[in-house]
Length: 453
Image (cartoon, rainbow, N blue to C red; front, side):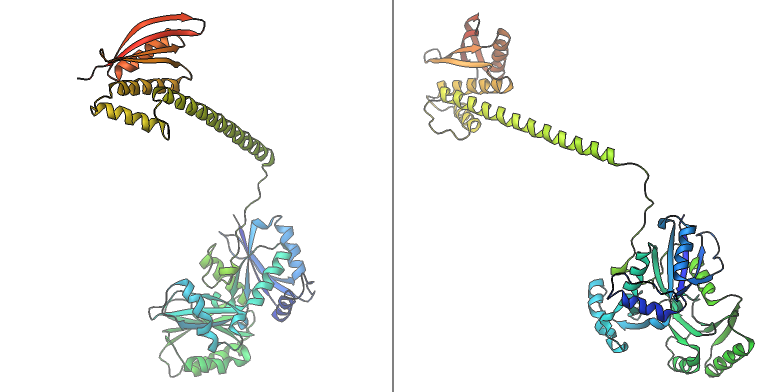
C-alpha cells in the first residue's frame, strides 16, 4: 500500500523564485528560508497533524520514514493566486482541435502571454462551455525538477481553492485569516487576499453566473478570532442581502491546510482529481517496486539460446536449400532423358503435367509420350521422396503392342515393388520382364501399358 504525503510551500514567493532559477541553472541550491507544511496519511486512515519545517528538513524526514520513494506519493497544494480559471465555448469535441483552439479562446481573459501557461480542461457542460484551469508552465517545470533532484515522488499538483469540499447547487468559501478561497464548481474558483475580500465578493456576487441555492462559508478557527468572524459575517450579509439564497456557516477546529488535506484524502483517495496539473505533457509516471531477483544470468541464458537456435535454423535452411537445388537438377536431367525434344525447360512439374493431359485428352500419336510422361512422373515422385532411388537407363516403345519398355537401375527389390505399385495406382499395367541384382543394385526391365478404357 502506498502512503500519501500532502505538502504546500509556506512562503510561495521564494518557491516561485526558485522555480524561475531552474530555467537558467542546472540544479540551483535550495535556500534555507523555504519552509513547507506537510502531513501524511495511509489510504485507509486519517490525515495526521501537519508540521511546518524547512524544505531540506522535510526531505530528511521523508527519507527517515520511508526508505524507498515507491512507498509513498506526494500531493503538492499550491496557492490559487498563481492559478486562473475560465470558461470557453469550443464547438469541436475532438481533443486535438480543442488543444489547438484553446490558447486563442482564452488569451483575452489572461493578462500575460497565454503560451506561458499550462492549461487543463474539465468536462463540457450541457451548454457547451468548457472549463479551463491554467498555471504558469515555469512553476510546473521548476517544481518537477526540484522534486526530481531530491528523488521525491511527485504525484499531483493541485490549486488550493479547487480542493475545497463542494455540494450540489452550492458555492464554498473558506476564510483562513489570510486568504479568501471561493469554489463555484469542480473546475472554477479563485483565491484572493483577505484585504480585498469585500471588493471581490461584491464583484463576484454582482456578476452571478449559475447562482447557487446555498452559500457555504467555512471558518478555520485556528487562525480566526471572534472579531474577524463577526466582520466576515457582516460582509457576507451585506453582499447577499438582496439575493435569495441561503447562507450556511461551518466551523472547523483545524487549519485550512488540514481541512483541504482531509477532503482530498477522504473524497479522492488514490484517484487523481480532474484539476490535477500533472496531466498531458506533465503527466506523472507510475512507480514500480524494485525487484530483488537477479535477472542477469537468466537474460544471458535466454540470449545464448536465441543465438544458438537462430544459428540452427540458419543451418537447417541452408541444408534444405542445397537439397532442393540438387533435387531440381536431378529432375531436370530425368525430364531431358524422357523428353529430349523439349529444349526449353521452365517448370518441370507443369510441363510434365501437360504431357499427361495431352494423353488423357486422346491426342493421336501420343501414346508413347503419354506413357513416358506418366512413368516419368512416378519416377520423379519416388526420387523426390528417396534421393537417387530409381535411375532410368533405356526407354523403348513397341507400337504394335502399345508397351513402353523401360530399363531401370533400382536400389533394391523392395524399391522396385514400391515403384510398380505406384504405376498401378496411376492406372498403368506393369510387368517385370527381367530383374537381376549385383553390387550396384537391381537392374530391371519393365513393360508398362495403359489400362484406361
